[in-house]
Image (cartoon, rainbow, N blue to C red; front, side, top):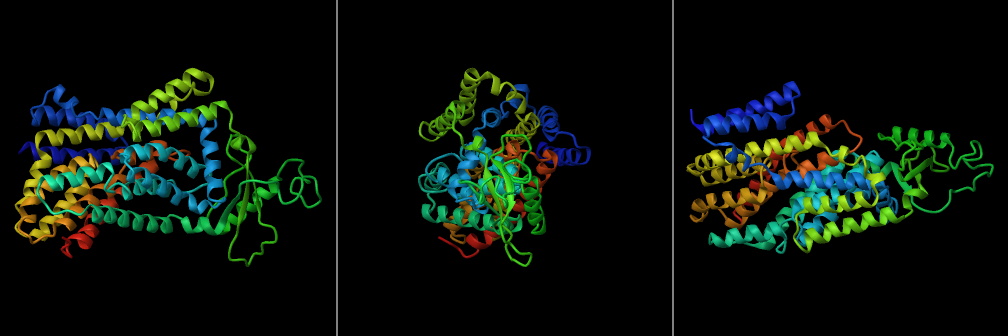
Length: 486
């Protein structure tokens, strides 16, 4: 049996064991990389370690370390409150704010993982505060990043257009950009509906500033009965209204520095009203900008500038900022290292090391050559899209396209397949799957999710990633390749 087939069988075994025995998949993957690489691939330890994703390791550790400090000193609460004020207190718009922000960052030159590293912790922190589906929020961040990722001035767009030009293929940077933007926006809209976004717009709205509707101590004031700013009964009423509409209001009075102090039902709302609105007031502590918060915000700006303007590594930049904050305020950052999601780091680094072994022993090239020998151009194009989607769920999307596009050259040169449409389909198929928890973007979403059952959330991301891998290449092929664009 060839080394390529052995490596594929071992990959299947890793997935089965991890799923059935609840063993960390990363640990299994490291063992698989050692056994397959040594016994079947003829690699030594240096050859195996060469595939260790050191850059992704540093990104995961650095970003989660920095935002653990930001949570400890209240900066994330301040950012959540700022996001609430930005959209006038409409929670349903927050996922779209995150989509647009990440898309804008990648469109103007940010690498997709860098944009997700900046936005994902904020977005998922907001999801935890207001009971928004973390899958929805995480997917909006990733799809936003990929939606803007192929603009003519973006990193992905520049690389792919350069590959097309070097292979003397006809290309259209505008079509490439719009194809990715349209597909990711459409998927985001579908997810918004399926994962409760429309219910958010019907059931909750925040009051981000100003005093309560009635003065404390007045006869009709909720505080009059309890002596507190907002009576517990008001919270119960709001929770009941939210429960009737299929969602729950965030808990108040938990003792944390959450930016929501209390909730109350809308005055005069009747049981027959089609819209139930919960009004929440922001905790003054969350909106107060003290020195540690200001320094952390400055550190986040430094992170953005260093990665987008000076093209510095996002992980190393994040760790540096985190260390500076730790030195200045050691008390609030003492436990931050312990909040780094080490099981996720092991999971991602192990799987990516195994995929690197597959690439080193020729498994990826082997599969690509098998597809290239298919005599039907349309079928070969569909298979290439699926290879792009499946492999990219575990490896570098752009690096993979660098290998796939040359494989498509032989039948593209025959003129039976439109080159512009094929390139767009490959780009979409190879990047939409970055919601997989094994990709850098998906790993950042998993690592920064708060107040969730991490194993359950991992399975949700894995299931959604599998659905995208199964559907996105087919849809991209139908939309861009079959009509014969370019």
